[in-house]
Amino acid sequence: MKTIPEYQELFKKGEITPTGLLTNCLKKINPSLNAYITVTEELARKGLKKDSKGKLRGIPIAVKDNINIKGVPTTCASNVLKGFIPPFSATVIERIEKNGGIFIGKTNLDEFGMGSSTERSYYGPTKNPFDETKVPGGSSGGSAAAVSSGSAVISLGSDTGGSVRQPASYCGLVGLKPTYGRVSRYGLVAFGSSLDQIGIIGRNSVDVGIMLEVIAGYDPKDSTSSKKEIDDYSDLNEVSKNIKIGIPEEYFKHIDPGVHSSVMEIKRRIEKEGISFKSVSLPTTGYIIPTYQVISYAEASSNLARYDGVRYGLRKNGESFHDTIRKSRDAGFLPEVKRRILVGTFVLSSEAIAEYYERADLIRRLITQEFNEVFREVDYLLTPATPTPAFPIGERTDDPIRMHVPDRMTAGANLAGLPAVVAPAGMIGNLPIGYQIIGKPFDEKGILSIVRLVEKMAPFEGFLKEVRDE
Image 1 (spheres, rainbow, N blue to C red):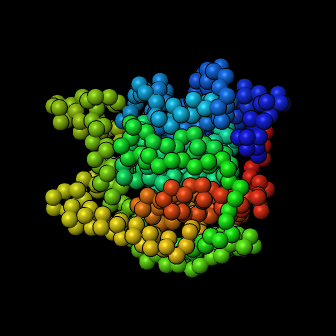
Image 2: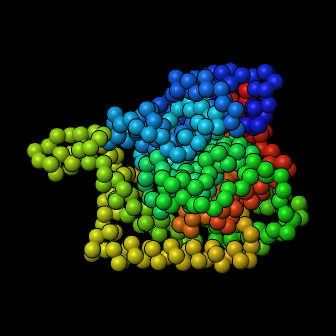
Image 3: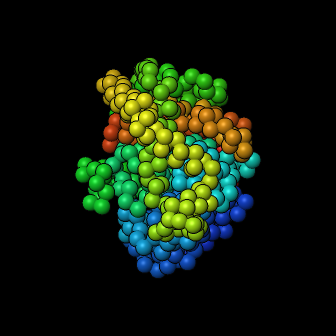
């Protein structure tokens, strides 16, 4: 399981070529996993001809299909965007291209990023490479399955409530959600604009750090992007022994015993390095899911109003202008997106906005304040990534409340705009599970450095599928 710097060194020595690596990744695309909506082999081979000397030279990258690549269809796994080809690339795509990265394909997702399992896609569900009867997590399940199965070295996803980190946990990978504003959202199709952040899914912290260094930074095209200087995310060798890591007791309730013991083993290993831990409390944890649902659904209702069958995408002609919009949206959206639009429209209505949306916004501020107070006591938080390993395909599709259960571990970081990373903690049976490190704003280097420390102590390559080996 090679890192990006190791591939670059092999390229220099001539022991492997970028073309050879791309060919190897293409061979590993497993149609039964349904990780890709569009394979872009021609675009990837065209990228190789540019002979860039950048940090990502020749590295095959998978991209979630809600991030625009100029000239390549963007579907958001929805029928409503049928035939849409964006005339521009997202800022992150332009920055990757300048650094020599090549794009192997656009990956499957829950429609418009609305789901926790990558089952709610117009193009069918994606399967977990460790067990094809299980989900890969969502909504960036295609991006995780692509890296986990070896058909991409690294991938981009989007994280609104845990959609990068949960698939990383279920597929034995490292998944990073940067601080809100650290990475430009220009060219990302919006779901919940105050929550969305483009994230990274890789095999190790080194690769994730290198990718972050490439895509992070201010973008004048995105008014929410930060002008704060970026760190050297590729240098993850130092972790101060003076840091203190918090264990929030609420995150360890109602979880699988195997998840609990695996995360506690991570704690013990970090403690052996002389780093101290402290038990802390985040009482508003129980309000994370309902708060996230109200805010994200409201923002989804607003963002998805533009898909009307008039300007682009699927069009179903009706007897009137409004009938055309109704028929187009009815045929274009799957049931889960329709449900979220309806709920979001309701909570924004004049009758309900004070009772639901304004109250959720207030609780969001309390959640953020609570994180800020805890970070006066500790430097980082260690939590499980998900309450259980990956669940069976079809088990929760008719139960939206159970489907949202894993979000209680991850959505708090989105509500508070904090950076968080998930990495492998071990196995339960044949399924991987992960731990999560949450940090203070813009301390991506710190959280990745802790993951790197754990990787050096006990690399989890033993439980990764052989299909990843070159």
